Structures are given as C-alpha cells and as structure tokens.
Length: 619
Image 1 (cartoon, rainbow, N blue to C red):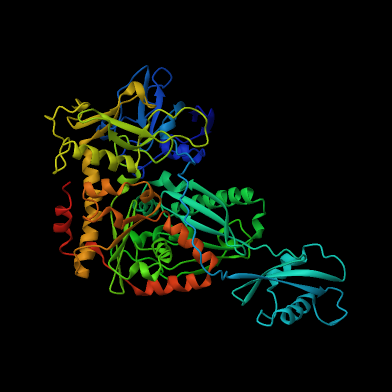
Image 2 (cartoon, rainbow, N blue to C red; image 1 turned 30 degrees about the vertical axis):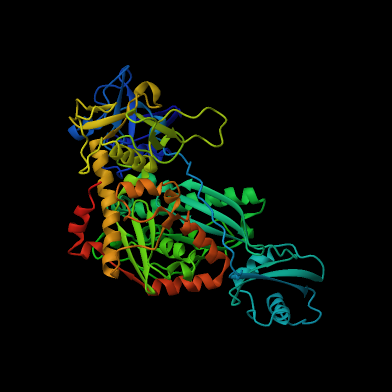
C-alpha cells in the first residue's frame, strides 16, 4: 500500500498493519513521542481528511486514544501515530507541532581559565625522505629515529595504520618537514608532510533531550565554534527509560538508537568545522560526556541492566575509543575520551559538572542540582561527596503536559500577572534567527510550567495541596466538559498557533507536584544524612537551570528555604566540564578521583523516601 505524508508530498510503501509512527520513521520523518510511543501523551497527533480516507483504511481508535484527541472539525480528524495502524492507501498530514525539529536551545557557555595540558601534542621536524642518512631503514623506522632525536620521549615508531594513512599523502623533495601528532606522549596518531601546528579538538555533551558540540583550539585555549541539536533519539521517547524499553522489546532497536545518536553527533561536527573553516580530519582529540544510558547508547552497550534493579551499567570505568570504531567524523585514528560513571543514574555528565567547581566551592555545605528528566544531586560537606538521582520525569522538559512542548519558538517560557486580579501574561520564545514577528503560542515548555504553577499558587488559584480552587473566580478557570477536569485557559484558540486553547490542567499540576517532590525529597534526604539543616550554597547546573527563576523554585517548594543570593546558576556545567577535560589531562585524572570519592544514595532503597516524598508534595 502507498502512504503519502503531507505537506512533504513524500510517498512510501508500507505493509498493511504497520503503525503510522513506524512508517513515518522509515520515511525519514521524525514525530514527537514524549511517552515513547505508548499512547499516553497525545503528542504524536496526525491529521486525516475524512473525504479521502477510505473506510477500513485505519484501525479503530481505542477509548484511551479518543480521550487524547480533539473533536473532528472542518472535515479533518486527528489520530495518534503510535496507536493507529494502516490497511489502505491514505494521505497523512503532519502538523508542525507534531514534528521533531532540529532546533535546540543554544547551550550556555562559561569560560574557565586553567593551565592547558592537552592529551595531544604536535611535534614538527625535518625528515630525510631520501634515506641518505639511514639507507637501510624503512620510511617508518627513519621517521621514528628522527622524531626520537627531536623529542626523546616520543614512541619509537608509528603504527601501521598511521603509516598507511601517511603514505597516501604526496611527499615533496628529499628533505621535508613532517608534523607528528602524539597522544599522551605514548602513541603517534597522525603524520602530516607539512608544518601545520594547529591543534583542534571537540567536546561533546550528550544530553537526553539535546546534543551540543564545542570545537576548541587546544593551543590557544579558546572555543572556536559551538552547535547544538535536538537529540534525534527523542522520537523513541523523551526519557531514557522509554528508550531502554524499546531495546528490551526489540534488541535491534539498540543499533537504531546508536545510529540516530552518531548521526546527530556527526551533524554537529560538520556544523562546527564549517563555522571554524577547517576540515574534520584536523580534529585530533575529543571528550564525550552524558548520563549512563546515553553513554551506553553512544558506545553501543546494552542499556537494559540500567532499567532493571539493581540498575547497574555494563561498566563504570571511562577511557578511550578510536573515532573510526564509532563512525565519528573526526580524524579516524583520533581517540574519544569518556569520563567515568558512578552508578546507573550518576554518569559522566555529573562528574564533568563537578570539574567546573574549585575546591573552595565545597569547603562548606554546597549542593549541585541538575534538573532534567532525571534530577542529579551532589552534596559536598566536610570533605565528603554524596550523590543521588531523582526520577523527576519529563515534566520539566515540557513533556507529558497537555499542551507541553520543548523550549523552541512558540513555547510559553514565562508567565506573570499584570495586575492584582487579572489573567496571566505569557512570554513566548521567538526565533532569534528570524526577523518575523514573535510566533503565536504553540504550547508550554519546562520553565513555563514552573512559572505557571508559581503564579497560580501565589494567586490562590492552586491550593497548597495542588487542587484548583474552582470557586476563586479567576479568569479562564473552567471545567473541561469532556474529562470533567479543572483547567485554566492561558491562550484561547483564536490566538494560538494550533487553533486550540492552550490550557494548563489539574493533571499538569499533579505532574509538577510529582516531579518537584522527587527532587525535593532527594535534597532533604542528602541533607538529613549529612546532619545539616541549611545549605551555604546551591548551584543550578544544566541548560534548563539557566532559565529558571530561583524565586519561583523556592515559592513552590522545589528547593529548601535559603537566601536568594546563595543560589547561583552555573549554566551547562556538563558541557563546560567536558571542555575542561579536553584542554587538560589533569582534569581527566581529577574526574577519576572525583568518581572514586563519590558515595551514591539509592533513593529507591531508602525506607524513609516515601514519607519524605509525600511531605514534599505540597506547595
């Protein structure tokens, strides 16, 4: 049967009984699937024309699917791509809000001044290519002997792989200039018949939601280019547990998830080298960090053990792997360094974030908080490091919210009240690269979710227990006639991009409660174990943390009471730490030492967790 996707006008062959989601994926079209394709979130809505859809061409909608769909209007009707199966030729329109766009918020960058000690160094020397000085030696041995004279601590000879790559390059004259790139003074990874002394590397931040690449000049201690991208794996689910579930159901999905990730990374590499005006084979070193599941996908390791008790990774140790072994488009013989993991939920991204802090930062009771689909916490007190991970869920990424979306153009990211009893005013993210007027609102992103709850609790619209006060008379507050659920209209349909009311529902409030209670319970348990009741400093790490208002976090009880001036946003600390490890071998060694020092508290094993969690539910 033939399936046509609109407005792309892309027609593909499919087998009767295939899901729309799978057909679209095979066609190279990425659709949102915040719940991992389980039919629970409603973000993968697609449109059909009633007149052109033959009877029996679609599977019948289930009751659960119908509850997530708007009513038919204008001769068109919605279905969920993850639950709908096709049995005949049809045309499918993919709405803009259903598509996965490459856009990702630009990762904030914080520069740090540290002594530069890169893992790769370049040595330039004059080589007798004629063999007059050493007529009986091979070119490989002659180069090794001359290099040893220029730098006695270098290896004796280049590998056969390096010589094979070098021998294919044109050599000029009997005496020529050669530049060797040496990794950790123990291995020649590249030979070039010129005096090019430039040295570049790339730091990769492999986030669950977005990827970022930082191309760096390792001699001049500077960032040359930056690029970010929505993680292509989001079509398999917003959170890592959903992606692990795909692998558990069909092990071949592991290769697809790894390929998706590598493809996204290579896209970023091509973007950054284009910005820098260099070639990909000039990148001679790389550092990659991510949470344990992302590192497993990156390396092609089976992540299933992370999703099952006792939640252990395949391996904890970091190390190096050649770029060509993963298909990463930098110099093929260059090595990619991965920082170590600590547990199934505390990974190299957390260790990298710790590299951005000085010893003085942890002289007193200091907490680092990274809020995302998981919340990672590290408490430093009395010279000890204690970490835990909280299952905050994807709510703070705008997922599993009725009108939730990622932080992209059209997302409501901040709300406030213009007067005492008036409705909420919404700020919408615009496209910084477009000169067009700000887009109409399309949904609510994570920072907007928190902002809405903070504003409505201040106004008394949301009670301390989390329920809407339907008797408060607040503008836009109503009961949905279909679900019977309380909700508040933020933007009416006529003013939204989706032509539907943008609402915030009672279930959305509950999702925020669950997420913020998980994080707060983790904080409280770490503080109880340390015997402290007050924090001296709190660092908000991560891109998401950069856009949060600490006053709102304190108001809804997501953070423990403390002075505002003791809460500091430190931006994308994982990406910053990856760059520090790229610039400095000492930082790589420091990462190993930090991982060994860190004690992990598994909240699921704590008998008191449930009580602390329930106490943290109230606003």
